[in-house]
Length: 233
Image 1 (cartoon, rainbow, N blue to C red):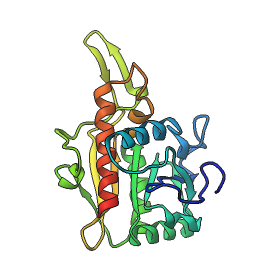
Image 2 (cartoon, rainbow, N blue to C red):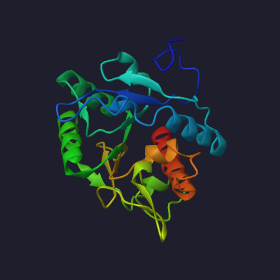
Image 3 (tube, rainbow, N blue to C red):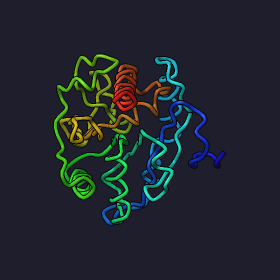
């Protein structure tokens, strides 16, 4: 067995992986922790607990942390990355990401906002998958493989919630939310893109009374839908 959060023996049916990366030249190291570790470990603790409650998937209780240059990457079919507008990859890492996705891996990206973040992410994906396009998933049924989503709402970050005379409101820095993805040649979704949203915060703050319970419940449904899709397609 590897050390905690390092690739090692696969002891569960589902072993999620969180992507390790160095920040790019457009970013600093991170606010007290590396950007790739934002929301960890609380996000995984709450979401994977919900997964075990609402499904029969035998899941690990935490994520493994893995870099694109680690050969163990290919042992983990579900890869979670936050703040992809901050990442900076070498050519070897970009090549590995493309190979991972072409070989059946599934990447979900979350918590990035505005045109600058989008430009960094889009450029990376064009390098990794030059023959694949980013498409709109707003009305795509693959987002509802297990739970029906009655709307495509903007999942707020905790820091963007404010109390007003009309009650608690979300004031996100950018909008609207975009539900996007990348498909392979067979039409299988291989990248799920939460742009101008912060699903990780909804998981992380599931036990925070200041965070709206409906938003955490919605974020759980979104995450479980993506996961179910990735494991069954």
